[in-house]
Image 1: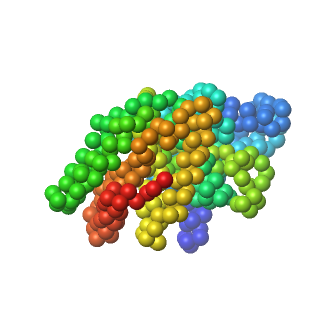
Image 2: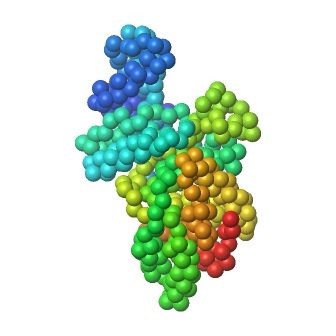
Image 3: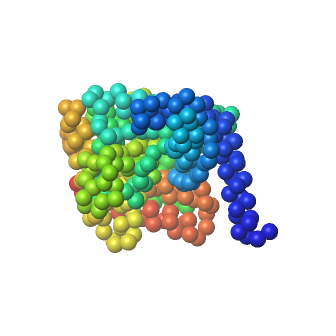
Length: 373
């Protein structure tokens, strides 16, 4: 059998498997598909049958999502729609993300007033036995590919994170950060006592900013560009970036895997530090400067404050009167990421070098207060 025939056979088998899976869960997204048709046409179908499916795989930090286009026949003709299917290794993980997806959706919906154009996909079906979740499909662009200027992207991301955090204020759980410092410092792989003491001293000075803050909130837990999609409220998706303004964009938040349920008194800058840590690190590695990312952070904070102001809540500068703990949070995020690289990919020359670069940059951030906003 030729290579072309082999590839063709694999695609056929894959399509059969997708159709079998969809047939098992069809009853759970039939209403969603019918709602879409009724919205578009004003009429509701009475029956449907799946004719064809196609799949695009999207790989994120937390796993793979299958974006599936479904072509189905109804008494109103041939229709197409999209759903997103995410697979899990265990029933427990399936149910846990399903629970958090519902919490996030409810949280955004219940904000008063709600934040316009900040959304999360609707969960259509959870099946722990098959280890899958079915979400509504989104015609959205990934963060890196969206036709928006960089400052508009981060402004919208800031608005979205504030919508997740909410307007309530409170003290920060300092013990949480003592634990993070211990995990990211005391457990530094291969580090001597002197280096660990340097980190503990630097972290201690920066943690003082948290003790005077009322920025405690419930975090998203893993807020990064891979968890953000953009779609458009207009037909101008094809316009040049400078013409597609943020007022025409919808921002979607996906994969709430680490969302925390109730007020856990986490610093708002923990999520911000996670989001910007890789951008600061990559810019510094390329240019020995952080000016571009630092400017983007300013736009992010403006977006975040826009949402807070809509609620009449204090701005970030009011919540952190003695300064933003951004150097602290970016450093912690980088050190934890470095240790994760070693654990996930094993200790070798390449991963050790990646880890050491993050340690070196973290020291610079903390010792020089490198990020200034």
